[in-house]
Length: 134
Image 1: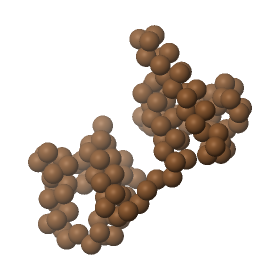
Image 2: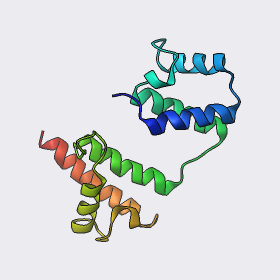
Image 3: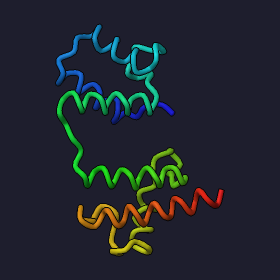
């Protein structure tokens, strides 16, 4: 799967923030693509994600615990095939699930940080059930 426009934009912004020269950027991209390319546009989704993670670490940017837990749920939904025709996670389906089956019966993004650990655990159980049914 190819990288998203959002990933490419984030990489470009962080490269500027790090003050990398063009040749340094190309070497960085080449390293994360295992020598396949020097272009940000040609990175795969996973390669771009790994590069973003490393640059965030270099810049001292940490994701909040709430962001991590929300991404965990979206990642599990993606693995279960809850996707839109465009291949993105179907957040509307996650929302519907949270409203109907979630412990707090409220929309996905409306959960407070203190509520998310139990929602993550609950969603992990759904994911496990999905894996066992394959």
